[in-house]
Length: 294
Image (tube, rainbow, N blue to C red; front, side):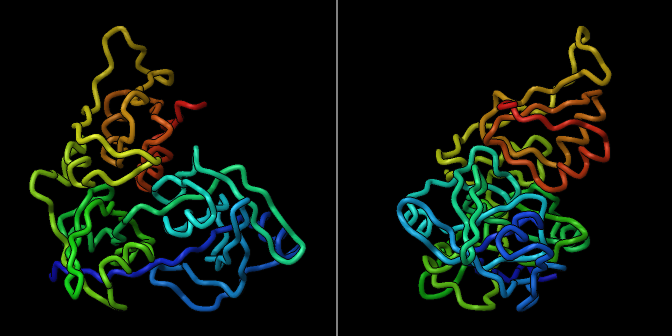
């Protein structure tokens, strides 16, 4: 199998809940597809909204289908124009992010949080991930060839049945390396970054200092999942406390090992990144995921 993947540029956009959709476009409103996107079931909509801050306004296209949380995804250049400092996060990781006003005509909603810059990520089905010898939560680099060649680090693998092989970067990143539409880029395992390591010790090196949550990642190894001490209760109250590990990537493997070792709660730092499969496995294993801010 080729070690190249298609890289798509993701322009600024917004995902909305059904409730917010109806507030902005009227009771009973439904999203109307304009074109299908690369990921199964995802589509660009005819609906647009305006993001408003004290510094300015920008138009955003709505991406469907409706979601459980309203989320605005910007490039850093967009954020600067709006006077915002959003964290670089995986989709759905909204804690501690800034809010904004969204408007459509005379209708407006105010978000207390929900504005992020999407972290670089690589979508893969389970079969594609197996062919690449990668798993959900692994971190790889992509080599972009052309007039402004560059190696982009810090792509987080998102693998699941609802994913199809494609990498996503934002407009700032695409313009910086003169990415062409439909360009294929080579997947690289960074030397020294053990992308399949259970304890994610290669994460900081692979990300190469990329900003997450507004501050640089420290190039320090993360601790493996410990076993509960003999004095700890093994049962529904046994808690694995990872809240002291800033910007930790929590993957499916972390959750599975925590379950095997008797933990029923995983407490994590507000700026930690939880992969989608980590959340799915936590729900399957009935493990509570608790942010340290709660």
